[in-house]
Image 1 (tube, rainbow, N blue to C red):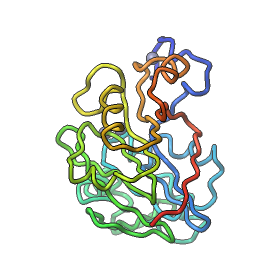
Image 2 (image 1 turned 120 degrees about the vertical axis):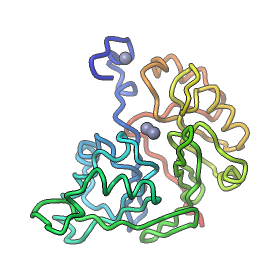
Image 3 (image 1 turned 90 degrees about the vertical axis):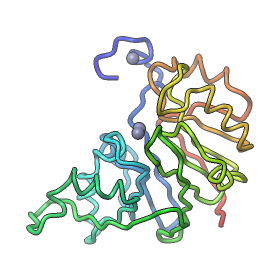
Length: 242
Ligand SMILES: [Zn+2]
Ligand SMILES: [Zn+2]
Ligand SMILES: [Zn+2]
């Protein structure tokens, strides 16, 4: 956290250096990013990502959309609009927050964005099939996504049984766990652990971690078998599923 003197923010352990939550999903032909955080530009530079086929959005909170303007670099090199996949609420927020990209006059250099609506049905980007999973962030519906045997869910504090069924059978899950203390719109670490146990997913990685959770080196060893704190740069290889 900016300006925070706590031991996590002052830590020199790279696993305590967290940019905002996002993932890159890549097959041999297709590259997708889930959410364009305020750190999107640096995240793409850091990994040297030269190709990006689409961005899919979980929800319209600023820490998940604010970096969208920087997709214009991909417009420039790929000579095509960037495909965005989002539910109606998130599409409306994108249009409201980046109005210059949707105006009648297209100034040179502005991002070229193509909105695609998604709801609960599976959709495809290139050779990647994506199954949306709707979870709750207090009263806001948020989309999680399942890619084959891998599920990514962030900014949830409640998952309905019918959506849990879509997650079951995953071999790996990334799930949000903010801190130890209860929070109105995010799972706490204890709640996230309980969710993973109930879902029966054998390997879990916790994300969207606040500095209030403590040092990675202190907390990670205390987690149940198969569960770990994720960290920036973590890379998982997932067998191609459906
Ligand atoms: Zn701090
Ligand atoms: Zn949020
Ligand atoms: Zn968030």
